[in-house]
Length: 276
Image 1 (cartoon, rainbow, N blue to C red):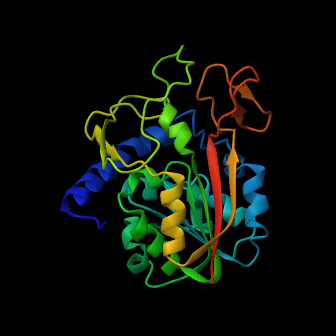
Image 2: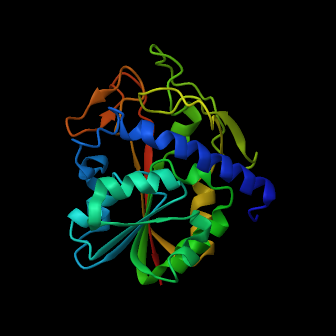
């Protein structure tokens, strides 16, 4: 599959939607950009998988406000670049992070050209990014081109099971583990009413239509392997950095999980791959 004109128009709608979301997110309690440490968005296993970042060049694809991107610089990376489709998100990211991180505005599919052929030791992406991409084979090829030989890609994403259950509650008392969306890819773009974003704050008034694509784990792994990236590790975790359901309990470190009397289901998956 390639990104055709219809998908380009959909991605333009996604860009406009995130441009309008960005100021709402900056002001939200959810992101709490003035007080929440960048490292708090990461589970402990992420740092264990990534290892020592000292002296390494890191690229964060689809970085939004850079709330996570700044953590790589704080942990000793030699250089850190965040890339995002939304011009407003990039502008806010630059303001929030200062000079410690370089930010580039570009569609992820155009990242190789936007970065002038630069390559990196680590490419990081995740937590609600892949669903905005129509073509994972092309994405994986882009990631491979951005990696140095021996470099690693680390993907931390909402598990397809969680996306099937629904990321955003339908109401304050929505405590049901009910399948609402596809797990597997194949139906193409899903048009969404994006009048409300996932954080606290006002409703959007302009760019209220967005699109998402479902991507199963098999599709993600196959795309990476097809691009010459070897999968080294795969994790599935039962925690989220916010309480999706009212009954979720705090783990004490900024993450939340379902109580013991509910089924254990995966919320995130983390995949580590390397380029030979």
